[in-house]
Length: 313
Figure 1 (cartoon, rainbow, N blue to C red):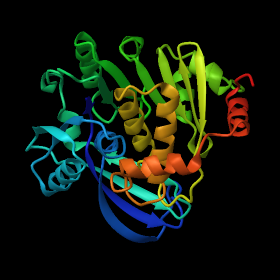
Figure 2 (figure 1 turned 90 degrees about the horizontal axis):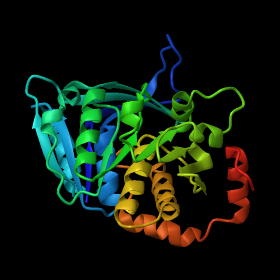
Figure 3 (figure 1 turned 90 degrees about the vertical axis):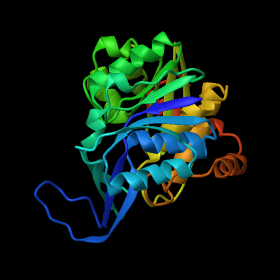
Figure 4 (figure 1 turned 180 degrees about the vertical axis):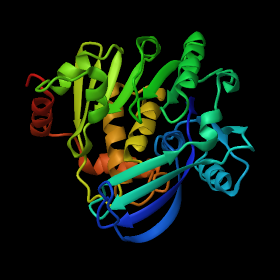
């Protein structure tokens, strides 16, 4: 069983020819709303694409935005532990999606900022606690401490990027970041490789996602790479969250890291082929079918990615 503790936002998504530069106005095509928020996206991915028993601790306002978020999570099979905050609006995010599937996101946390240490439940049979950084940092640290005390593995997706102190990192069993977040955390110097940056992060296991290239993991002193599955991207919003949720679901189900990386990569690729964060999360069987159709990864693909990451061939 997995507990996701984190954010839930209603996403207002404008599609446009390109993401505007600072000070620029760009005319958009359409505006739609979708259920989102890193925590909620990852919970849906755990349950729907990962097929794992999933609970979520979240904070919502007493407003219409909350209804759409609750409905999406329940439909995916997520069991909810809701902290109701009537004095604050439910979290929102404003997303611009370009025609090439790139995006830019601004988040208004709202009720997410009210999630606090006293809301943490007794974990019981929970194997993994999955968190992100769209809720207060002191709350994330408190939950990590309490999870460790209950022998639950702590997984942190360190996004959006923030400065994390050594005390928090010492509580994390598995860290998931993208390439820019890794560079920020590792204090990367010009010319340093992905592998060198992974070495500088004081967490037992670290996974870095590399966009259309794939991903790389360091588990202790061992390194693994997984190439991305080629797709025609429509919207990359939520693809990283899908990756996180499915990765943790696979680990919860007893799979090794290599298998978990492959499942997570397939699910993230599928998520890029449809619009919306949670609406883009694929079904468990779709992930199985993609893996079956793709077959084993070629040694040539592995070699190219290892070279990119600065790993020996």
